[in-house]
Length: 324
Image (cartoon, rainbow, N blue to C red):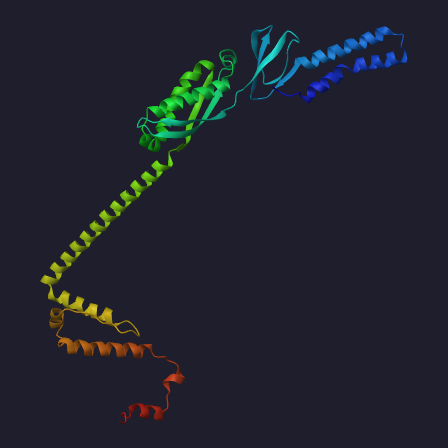
């Protein structure tokens, strides 16, 4: 139901201006009854004109009935109707309208109770059918949508509903559009907003997903170890046929292990590698380690002039053998 338009009030006063003048004249001459009747007539005409005047917005259609029969559609814009004989039965909104609907505790095909919420986007294509073919097209669309949603849920498994919402949207749109087409309603789209499942089932699905991810992680770790073992096997073949490469690799291992600054590092090297390096066994390894540690300490000593220029007396004291 539309509210009163300000133009109606303005039109009423414009038409009733002569009546106001007649009322003023009758007040000055009380014995002039024709002036009173003229004012009353002007008032009646102003009321009828204001009632007959209507304005439909750009997105509206007015359904006109004349003595109970459909006369036509009016609007958008201003229009007049015949007072007392015609009336505006419906104001049809031709814009796209959204309607929310849901199905609660509905069993799926695999007997899982779910609560589903959806949104329907629809538009009135034929205002005459929407006004004459159904009593309340908005309520009818809502009930038809809920019935279609329950029907689709009953024919679908839970996994299909969770993974294929777009497919369900298309099925719902087709079913609802087929039911509302005879009412002059076009269904633009249907979108499922949310699917709520029982908490116990959510916990079970979460545990299943966690176990699946853990299985995948173990498979990936095992595959990684297999690839590393294959690379080590390829490297072993290379060192077996190339003693020089094995020798260089052993030298690099010793260097990487002994170059750590200000730390004592224990490097475990197979005896066979020491033999190929000709370092004289364990004694040669110990001598090499001491030499590299001394070089690291000398490189890490401060380079400032004050620290380098120590007195000869202190140097001699350092060179003196310990006294017993």
